[in-house]
Length: 146
Image 1 (cartoon, rainbow, N blue to C red):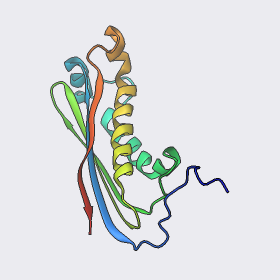
Image 2: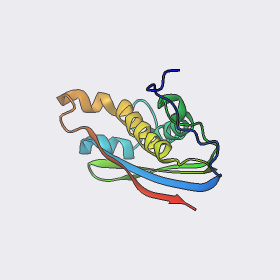
Image 3: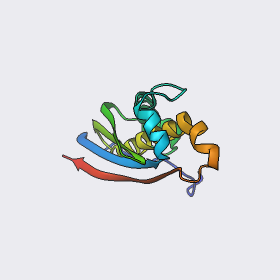
């Protein structure tokens, strides 16, 4: 047996516990792009609704994307946005009652939501080679284990 290989952490002996995580992150965009999003004039469609759905799907697929994540029985996902003059904040809240936490799921939900926004507005942002565009400050802001 190869002892130094990679393997998932064995959680089979752990008790199911209520867990919740909130993660957030930002995408900086040109003010003109934000205005088009607010006015519903982005060619690809409703940016925030699409990013919301993408974030929810990403939470449910986290174990497929990150090799050592366990598949979890997700009981709730909420993705919301705050729109500012030159940036959008994505907030993802994930809940479960299980043997391991949902931090990676919440972080993945935020990340994919922000990437989806970028994809939907890239034709407006790439004009100056994405000079102002960036995704940043993705982090866990709250974790509950009860």
